[in-house]
Amino acid sequence: MRIAIVGDGKMGRAVAALATARGHTVHCIIGAAENAGAEALTPERLQGAHVVVEFTRPEAVVANLERLTDAGMPTVTGTTGWGGELPRIASLVERRGGALLHSANFSVGVHLFLRVAEKLARELAGRPEFEGYLVEEHHAAKLDAPSGTALALQARLKAADPERPYPVTSVRAGAIPGTHTLSYDGPFETVTLSHVARSREGFAAGALSAAEWLPGHPGVHTFEKMLFGDSR
Image 1 (cartoon, helix red, strand yellow):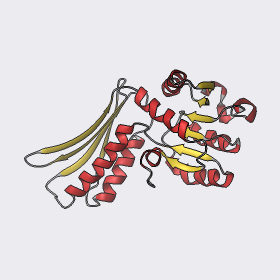
Image 2 (tube, rainbow, N blue to C red):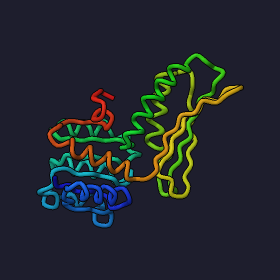
Image 3 (cartoon, rainbow, N blue to C red):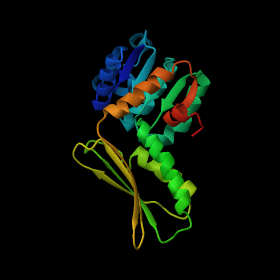
Image 4 (cartoon, one colour):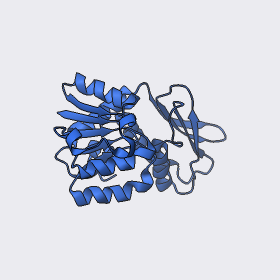
């Protein structure tokens, strides 16, 4: 498979390295310096690629997805911080007959964590002696806070247990790949559920698996839908 990568940051480079190790061809890597306003995403530059993996920045992703959809490229994006534009981009993808897979997190473990957390929230609903809250930690260069994963987790918890607000505390420091912790603190005990990423390679592996799956699956998808086959 020939994979075009948009974004030459740490995640883009990790996906490129893993793709090569798996026997794929990296068609091109398009960095921010040449892609202002998505101007580098031309049909000529993308010709011959089977799929695009996009990891850029919140201010760049929407224009990138518009250009990639117009170019007919199945696209996997892990960029966060643009959820308000998702309905419009999804409508564009559907109208064009394109394929888009988006996720705030490409870790298989995180998606298992989300499902277990939702079940835990249902079990603790109606027990006001426990106060629920979230803490998410990421590297200092991560721009959005709370993280997309934390917001997705918070939404699921509130849906399962509407009486709790589940406030989020964000930490941006050092080189932390990503840690998400759900805690319920009671007067005599604390219940804690955590997911700790040890490196970016886990996220790169998930994104690459999504890129391998997406061609031939038109429409708008999530990583969770790909993993578990449901509509989340």
